[in-house]
Image 1: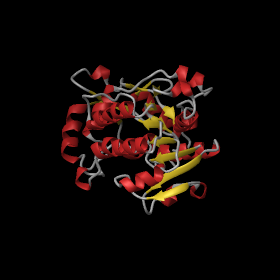
Image 2: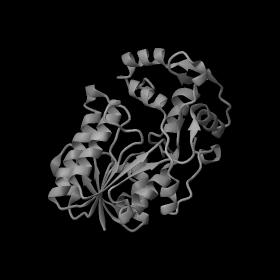
Image 3: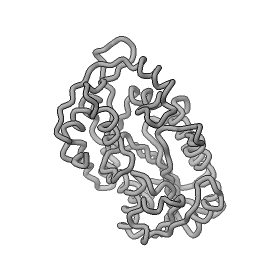
Length: 304
């Protein structure tokens, strides 16, 4: 089977591509000019040079394919550069879905995110709209909603590496955020980290599995609160990082002014979603696909 991959050069996408190749799939992958070096096994892929905003590039990527994986996404937008949630999460996805229908492709797997909703942050809303459009237009869809994804980024963006760089490496305690005035709730919001290899394996294993058709898979393993996550990450590189309660409101006000700059480490949307928490229970999915999830612990974060 030939699979079209959109978003195959990023952190998660590179693992999905490797898993597809290891499983014997033929791959058409859309790659922007100059990004070819981001694909480790480029000689084993059918590379289509082009842009996700170009319909012809999309059509060429979908040619002769029986399944589509759409893994394009951003965690922050920079509107001055034309990098927006609306465009990459929804409008480009819509174009890929429409052309897939024209080419009679019935199998489509979408990377979404745990916690998406119709009235939320820009990130959450556009991911949700993409899900709704996919469900309405493709017969055999699957939506993957991971919680926090961790694993060796191989130089690409990844949560643990970014947290170490932007927060934990600074010479003062890490902030345990809380909203309102109840400092006892500081750092108690939870996430369900899942290893990137487990995410990639589920993506690929569900391509031809009828059980996955018309299903939403929320992916996460054990729950950890923010303080525990900081402790595990810092111990992975031989440190013991203290935390201090930090009201989120002042940080949010600063982010309103500065999050349009790439050097500022966090956006307003990210702060909002962080305090909401992000958990799920995926043991039935792991059981179905015979996966023993890689645990979120310091020995599995040696890449830090």
